[in-house]
Length: 429
Image 1: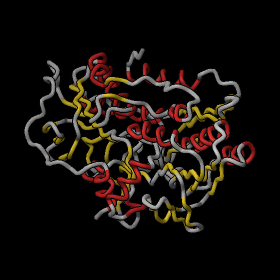
Image 2 (image 1 turned 120 degrees about the vertical axis):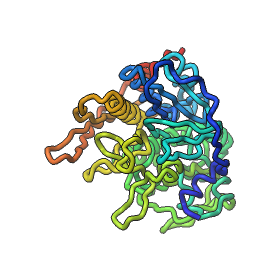
Image 3 (image 1 turned 180 degrees about the vertical axis):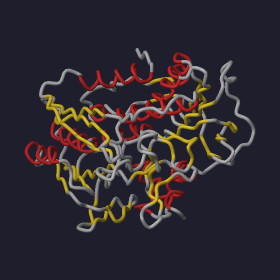
Image 4 (image 1 turned 45 degrees about the vertical axis):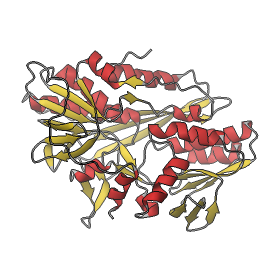
C-alpha cells in the first residue's frame, strides 16, 4: 500500500464518486466563470474574500467538510489552562453570506482536471478555475507502514493537536495525566508552524511544574531545535523537560506505548505523537505533487513560486500549508496562518487578473508574522517576522527577524483578530 493512500485511510475510507450535480445554491446572477476553492480555512477564506473584491463577476464557491472553522494559532496556552480559547469559532456559511460568496459543506473526493470537475460527497461541480487550499495531513505511514489500526490508535489515544478536531481529545488526555513520562515528537521540517511545537513544549513544562505533577516531558526532535527554546528549556525547566535533538523515530507501538529511535527504546505513560506531514491526499490523487531528482514524488504540492499555479495545470492554483518548494535557498515558506492568508490572497489576485484578461501582475511575494510564547508566568512572548524578495536571477530570498516582547499585552490576540476581520471579512463577537 502506498504511504499516501495509508495516510488517507487513517481518516476514513474513500467513498464512491458521485456523478450528479451537487445541490448548492444557484450560481450568482450574471457570473461569467466559476472559481471553486477547496478548503475553508486561512488560505481559502482569504482567497474567497479577495476574489469577491477584485472580480465581482466571478462565481466563487468554497467547499469544506466542516461547517465551523476552529482556529489553531493560539491554542497552546489554552491546552494548559493558561488562557481561555481566545479565537472565536466561525460559521463558514454565515461568513460566506456576509462577504458574498457561496459555501458548500461537503467532502471533496476527487479532482478531474481533464474535465475541470470536482467530485464531492454531495455531487459533482464544474469549474473554470480551481484553488486547492486543503492544508496538510499526517503521514502515519512513515511509522506504521500499512498498519491502519496502529495509525488509528495513535491518533485517537495520543493526538498531537496540530489539526483542530484533535484539540479537545488532546486536552482531555493531558487532564488525565497523573505523572510519569510524557513524550512529544517533532518531525523533520517542514511541518505546520516551525516554532509551535517548541512553544507547546514550553507550556507543558510550565504546566507540569505549576501543577506539581511528578513527571517529565521528553521531546524527541528529528531536527536540531530552535536555539532560543533550547536555552530556555535548560535554564528554566531542567527538571521538567528533556530535549533530545536529532532523534529520528524508527517505529511507534501505540498499544505498548513505546517509541523506538536510533538511540533508545522509550516507554511512555502518555504522548503527543506528531508524525511527519505532507499535503492532503487529494493533492496526490490530482497528480499535483512535487518530484525529487530521482523522479519520486514528495508529499508537497508542486507550484509556480510566483504565480502559485500548478506547473502541470495552469487552471489550478495552490495556497497555504500544502505548498511545496519555492526557493533553492530555504525550501518552503513557513507553514503559518499568516503565510496561508497571504498566499491565498496572492493566488486570488492571479485568478482575478487572468479571468478578466488583465495585464500580467507584478511579482507579489508574501510575508509572515508569528507570535510565540516563550514562557507562561511571567508571560513572555516573541514576534517572528519573515520577509521575502526576488533576486535579480529570479530566486526568492528570505529574511527572518525576531522581536522580544517581555511584557505582552494581547498582541497575539490582536494579530489573530486582525486576520479574521482583515483577511476573512469576518465580524466575530
